[in-house]
Image 1: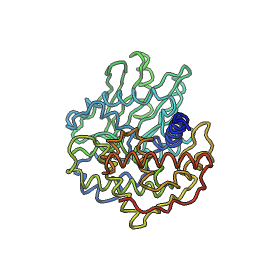
Image 2: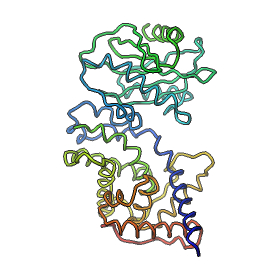
Image 3: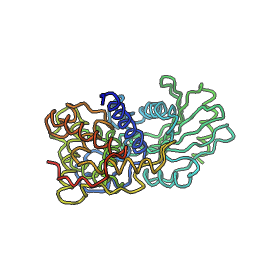
Image 4: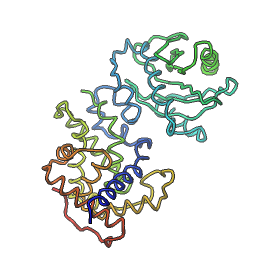
Amino acid sequence: MSADPLRDDYADQTAQIKQFFEPVMTEPIPERMHLRQPAWIAHAKAAILVGIGVAIGLMVSLVAPLSSDPSLASSQLPLRAARAHLVYASEVRHPVEVDATQQEHLVKWLSKRLGIDLKVPVLAREGFELLGGRLLPGNEGPVAQFMYQDQSGKRLTLYVTRPHKGDALTAFRFAQEGPVSVFYWMDSECGYALSGELDRPALAKVATAVYRQLEN
Amino acid sequence: MDYELIVPYIPNLRRYARALVGDRDGADDLVQDTLERAVRKFHLWRPGDLRAWLFSIMHNVFVNQLKSRKISSDQEVDDSFAAPVPGVTRADVLDLQRALGTLAPEQREVVLLVALEDMSYADVSRALGIPMGTVMSRLSRGRERLRRVMNGEAAQQRSGLKVVQ
């Protein structure tokens, strides 16, 4: 027997193993892997570990590690949100971890992980439907990301984080991070950032709607 | 110390564990124990190949679990181990999983690290703490056996091989 058919078989084998187990890569990390055991807590002097459960999103902070200096946190909000937007809004197959058909579960789950009651703005009047959401690790705890899409396929993400120690309340502000426009603000409970590859006036319209719904 | 560095590898560890152990709970136990140990031993990690280091920890935990019979050397396949892949039936996945289960654990490890992680012989050698020659022979034996089982050439008898050293 020549070696070639064998080699082909092995190549198929490898491809098959990879393909069949690929879905595990995007499964949500089980709750018990997050914070269950004291060993983690004992060793996790830094609150960094609060976000340990969510693996996928961390690519973001690895791409360009950020300082965890809390005084910088508020100015980092738009940057982090924009990076998370770039990573996930371009995802074709897995833009979200939990899709909008399970909205109730999604909101409950993310609220539990962040420890706050999250509200999901309805942006139908602005032409955007909720696709779903995912949990991301932030420097100091979990972060929720909700994704919206309009009819042309344009996506927006709403990034919601717990405030960091020493954060000041921040009024409604605009930042441009590369191709991504971001409107962000911080109230006493949360930091919010709405990101999209839209121009400022277009995003402002949606961001205003989000702001109104969340701050009322 | 930045344990955050470990986090991006959790999906890789889970994927490998799922293929290695077969059932979801057993695999996640393996990942969990690996993560705990990695955090405890993080100070021993020298900046370098973190992935190989994490997989070497998983290997040690796996071997210990086999020894303590926390997991069986034969896979216990359940039907919830992988989410569906478009165009692939559950039966296909189960067939592959069963075929993997016929490999000796030490062969399964090498085959899976190469297939799932695209590891080189050197990476596998580091992760499993075995010489390159051993990596190559386990890989070729494992692949050959898997091929035969998948082609129905070999009876799917249990390998009955011993625990990995």
